[in-house]
Image (cartoon, rainbow, N blue to C red; front, side, top):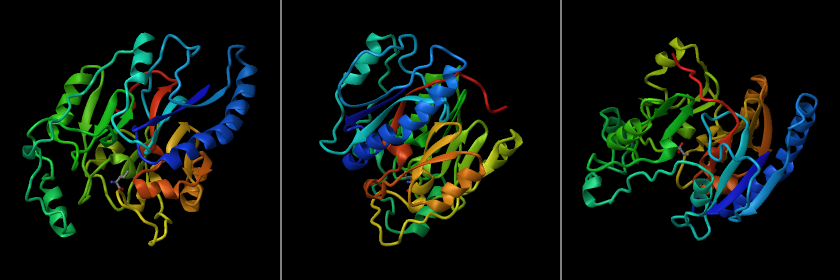
Length: 318
Ligand code: NVA
């Protein structure tokens, strides 16, 4: 079962959210039905149904695991897609629902966002300066209080990878580390990137030991992954035209993909070269155009929050 929930204020871009929802309805129903047929031969409990809804909360058959998502590639069963219209801090409707059904509910520290959290003299205009500062580990946010964006983290079972970015500081990372210990280990990784902000167009884990690594932003700790036997895939240069407006991100949204499971990926319909790359890896592509949503600052991974993926907690990093 795949449930798609659209939530105002949860992400960016109303049109794209609706489009993704509609696309899930069309494209995913197809593969869910195929999966169902395959599963029915082995399991009478197989269920395939796709829900599209807008903030309506209804009871769900699965009771034992309302929220569960250990990595970026296990079969996706429920996902939240954000809407930009009326964007604001969303109401706790979804959290209350999951809490009633047994989920643990944690609210991370809310930064006061006072002046001390920002380096007021940070040179935001010169890329060269920012290259130097980023190489020195200096960013626009200070260590005044914990702050982080979830999008600076990537999950691979018991190991999480995070970058110190313009919006995620070491105190925020330390909060996450202590919060998740001892079951999970948080690794800080870094890239040659003058403006790190959200890791999912830089280092996007797409399978067990399989990661897309942005060739323009080499990972400084890549040997750690190679030694652990991971496969590092360099995605091709994005095809998005120079004149396409992008206000909050780079063209590398092409690699900001959403894995529906290990063998199916949601990818931009216009990015034919990365589609070929996925097909060569044995991963089928579900093609959707979200160029207009890219302009608002995000790709498939940005736009979505996994609620539940079917899978178990494992270690993929030794
Ligand atoms: N800031 C990064 C990630 C965007 C999702 C970029 O522009 O590539």
